[in-house]
Every structure is written in C-alpha cells, then in structure tokens.
Image (cartoon, rainbow, N blue to C red; front, side, top):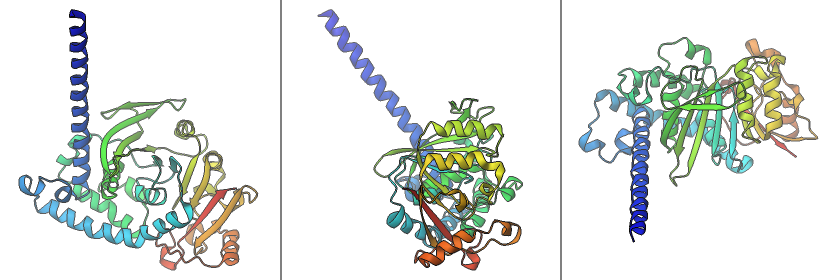
Length: 359
C-alpha cells in the first residue's frame, strides 16, 4: 500500500510539474505575442484589457493609426495579386519555403506559400538585437524606426539593403518580422537566437548570443498550428563562409518551394553559382521575377514555365541583365490578367512573376 501511495504521489507531482511548466511556457508565449502586437500597432485591438487598464498614449495611437491605414492599402495593392496567384496557380502544400535575398520581407512569402510550416529567409540585415527582445518595447524610438523602415517598403514592395544598413532609423530585422507576423494574424510564441557551426548544425539561445547570425521565431495561426521562421544574415556569394554553413543548414530541410524577388540580379552572376544550384536542386517549384535565376538555367525538359504579369527590360545599371527569353514567353502566352504592383519596374508596368514547376 505504501508503494502504491508513493507511486500516486510521484505521478501527482509529475503532473503538477508539467502543468506548471506549461503555464510558464504559455506566459512566455503571451509575452512575445504582446510585444508583437505592440510593435505592430495592434495593442488595443488584440488585448482584451488594453482599453481599460493600459490606455495608449499619443505616440502609440499615432503608430497604430499609421500602420492600420498603410497595411490595409499594402494588402490591397501589393499582396492582392500575389494571393490570387497563390490560390489559382501555385497551390503549394509544401512544408518548407525558401526565400533567399529577402531581408525581413515575410509578407510576400507568406502570401505566396500560406500552407508552409517552415520559412527560411536570408539577407544582409543584422539578425541579432543588442538587447533582450523583452526589453525592445521600452525603447522610446522603436515605433518611429519601424515606421521609417516600412515607408519605402510599403511603397515599393521590397527592402533596399544599402539604405537600411547605413541608416540609424532602421528598426532591425527582428522587430519588422514581429510586425509582419502580427499583422498577418499570427501570434509570436518564442524568439531564439541561432548560431550555425561549420557543418550547418544550429545552436540556440534565448538571449543575444555572441557569434549568432540567425533568428528562430515560433508562431501560431488562428487554429493554433505552430510554425517557425528562420532568418539568417548571410553573404551567399561563392566561397563565403556564411554561404557554406547556411546552405548546409538549409540542406537538412530537404526539398521545398522557393521565392526570389528584387534580388539585385545576383543570381545572374557567376559568383553566386552555389546558391543558384542549391535552389534548383532543392525546389520543386520556383516563383521569381527577372532578378532571380535566369531562364537559361531552367531546362525546359525539367521545368514547366509560365509568366504572369508583364516583363519589361531592366533599366539603368541592370540593363545588361535583359532576358529575351522572358519576352518571348510573354508573347507566346499573352499577358496574364494577374496584376502586380511590386518590383524594380512597377512604375512602368513591369511587375511580373515567372512560375517554374518541375515536371
């Protein structure tokens, strides 16, 4: 009888311990969700108690009003065509979505591949904040920097890396990703910093980690399905150490789908052959504009190609990357009714996407 009682006691302790642990995890998830809502200007609408117990001051009210208006316009003008393409043409059910050269541009990959459970992004923007994420909301200038970072993005549909790297007004990749996730209707549950060793094996830390060059964000949708987003600061040129380790890390996820957009035509250059080969070998479907992988690398016996929107020749310093093959593809199939308003040539009706599916 004594043994039986001890077993019951031990089981009871185990249950209560796990319940307590679950409660702690829930509190942590709630903390990150609240930070995301605050940064996204959703504090009033997302928190049941905010209007009664946490009245917003003039600065946060102004921030919320600005993002409400701009996000609504951005969804209608920029993401609307992408969502139509996703639903009518792409129809991806893949678990993994790669978006290299993206910076913190989560809205497009999410709109195009909404069913993915893991998103892997990369850019040159720093991944790690110098402070704990829980302390970010105490920075009085963070809301201003978020708006300053998003103004050109809302207008163009992409981030200009050179401008962001050298401006004090840049909010950082992590705050912007939390804004995008929250505005897309997700709840941020956890944020961890990631470092990758030479073999592509990651290590994680809840606090800013010396040598870390990546982020892992756990988030959930309305049905409480958990997803994850990785963002890494990585130079993807051939021979760069960060490129080798990053691609080894990505290789562990197997085959997925890829988005390439506003990528400065880097994949047209020989010095980005490794990442180009990786995308071709690890993607069953690629959605890209003309700044992505040139058509000459897409073997028609392997890839089925269809152009949506209108291709226009590059201008200025990018004129040498003209692709007559895309122009021929457009003429052979006619202009697609799908309309976009993003990319380098959006102002001259040059927004387009090539959908390449493996046969």
